[in-house]
Image 1 (tube, helix red, strand yellow):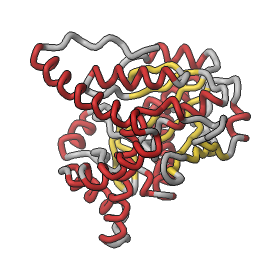
Image 2 (image 1 turned 45 degrees about the horizontal axis):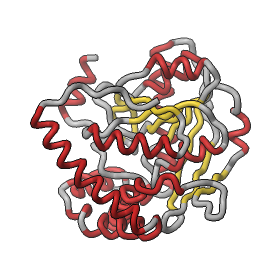
Image 3 (image 1 turned 180 degrees about the horizontal axis):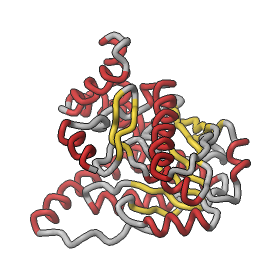
Image 4 (image 1 turned 30 degrees about the horizontal axis):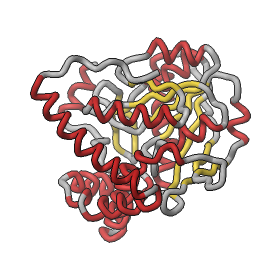
Length: 309
């Protein structure tokens, strides 16, 4: 399934998004031309030397100081440099998604702890992860292991860029792609039909609930917990690590061990807290692999809004 048709754009939006897309496609053409490994390396250079100079680096510093107050400034700066190197590589690697695979003459992805996949094969399952390394590797790995279903994703603001990325995924035989802003009914249908839903659950959402993340409440979507509890499907976790250049190791982690109390609202909140705890554990295992530029913790306005709900 391709992304849903975007709302009609105004003339100014068409011009702005068109200009952005033209620049994006120019870079994609260049990255495609020079090959995967060179593209990844150039992307890393751009990340370290251009992306790292943008204002959002200040947010990454704030987030790391909150999450790892025990680390020195030098240690946190090294994490930020690695993060920007990785993000630049991720952008460049979108031009080569079709070249990533587990098999063939040049396998770029290896999967660890495959036994956990075999345990859930043929049943509805939620597989949760975060923005680790190149997060696009995880659904590729799932597809190669025959886990039919869908990925739930947040579309880029630019619909033309969204279309390019969706097509790049589709060429790789991706699972169905469902915008997180739509498609709840479709997600239910797939889970009830024994399919897998892959979801990045590490971003802030203003419509979420506060749940601890690195010792502070973070606005977190309760959707995975609500789905798992209502449909009684297991929740697995996966993380991804860049192993140098454009090569990755995807690790499948054990399922969430959660026993419902029978109080639907309390269970949803408790499971959401448990999900955040598992995501935090994966980030702590290798913080340089995670994307630290999200506004993960709430502003004063967010806190006020959540207290009204």
